[in-house]
Structure formats: structure tokens, C-alpha cells
Length: 307
Image (cartoon, rainbow, N blue to C red; front, side, top):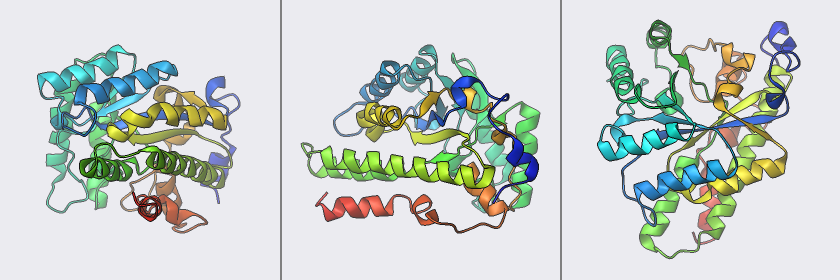
């Protein structure tokens, strides 16, 4: 099923740079930088480990800053600056990560969250007027959805859509709990499950893009600035290279015309591809369960192995 004959006709040839014409993926990370303590690595070590993995593979990524996690303090601001100085894009992910779908949160309050974060990140190298919705939720009512769309346009912000969503945050929670109980735990089984999780999501969203658009789109992947990626990002990038995917910058990926499309369901959110699917009334398709289970199957697999 395709969005329209016109959308289906938008093919890679002639519209995108050569780097993005093969199956490609851009890396983006939300919620950072965090000054919270975690097992094994300090905030500075986590930040540097991720930057080192990106540098090793010559990957340019994007960091979507939730300023209240640390960037509003000198130590956290320095961590965010390091991303910009390394050539990565810096985007806005609100001050405190509220949920626009919450009935307790007004549209004006959410907009203020965006503006307060903007004041903190605007002076950073790599700053872009890119906004990513928290929880990938665009509001529980059409009024919130349309109000935010108008607000972002007025502020010169683009919606920094995600097409390839992962549940790395859920596996990160499992990882930190495992290490809290046993700081010397063998992480090889968890790494294996994590890599399999990211691979499964990548292939599933690629299949969904082919179903909806009739082609491979330039995927924008959502991950998080957390311990699991500090430990295994090098392996994740290596896996995509082994899969034959081309890694591009988020700016390159956003050149794909698919990111100009606007889902019309009442309250869109989650992956852009899932929002498109639901706008078309295609709520269930082969494999959809593994895209919305928040990693339940992966956690069950780990528990079955005693992890």
C-alpha cells in the first residue's frame, strides 16, 4: 500500500545525493547529554565513548538535547559542546522531556519547553533548528498537533522525524539493572541480543518503507545517549556496514522527500513510517508487533538466559 501515486513516483534517482541512494541510515541520539551516574562509566566517559565510536567510523550524527538532563549545567553543557565541535548536529528535545499527549500539559507549556531549551543550545557549534518530539508524540488532540506544527514553522524549526525507531532505552534499563546487581556481569549475551534487536528493527522498517513508498528511503534512526550505546555503538555501526547499508549524516537523510510528507491521522507520533501507515488505516501488518513491543521479546530472551 502506498501513500499516493505521486508519492510512490518519488524515487531516489535525480533527487538525492549518491550517498543516500543506496539503503542508507543516519544516526541520531536523544535525551543527552546526561549527568546521571551509571555503572562502569562516568557521564564524561559515556559521552567520549560514543564520540570515539562515531569518529572511528567517520560517522556524523545528531544529538537531540534534553537540557534538563545536564546541558543546563556547566559540566553537561561541555559534553554537548563536544558533539558540536566534533562536527555533529545539535537539535532540540525540550528542557525536561514532558509528554505532549498528557492532558495535564498545555500546548503553551510544551512550546515554552522548546524555547527554554533553545536558549541553552543556540550558542553551541552544530546547532540546527531541528526539533524532535518527546516520546515521538505530537499531541493527544488535533489542536495540539496543529498548534505545534504552526509554532515550529513560525520559529523556523523542522520536525526532525524518526523513521527507524529502536527500543534501546528499554534494553539500557535492563543493562543498568543487571550491572547494579553484579558490576562484573558478562555483557556478551546482552550485546548479542541488542545487536539483533537493532538489526530486526532496521530490516522491519526497511520493509515498511518499501510497502508504503515503493522504495528504500533514507532512514533516520532513533537511539539514545545512554550506557548501552556508550558500550556497544562501535558494534552497532560495524553491523550496519556489514549489512551493506550506507551511513549518511542526518542532514543528508532529511533531503529525502519522504520527510516532507505530513501524516494526517488525528494525533500522529512514533516512527514517521508508522504514522503514515496509521494515516492510511493500516494499523496491523506482518511483523508490526515487533515494532511496537518496546523490546519485550528481547527482554524475555535475556531473562530466559538468566540475564
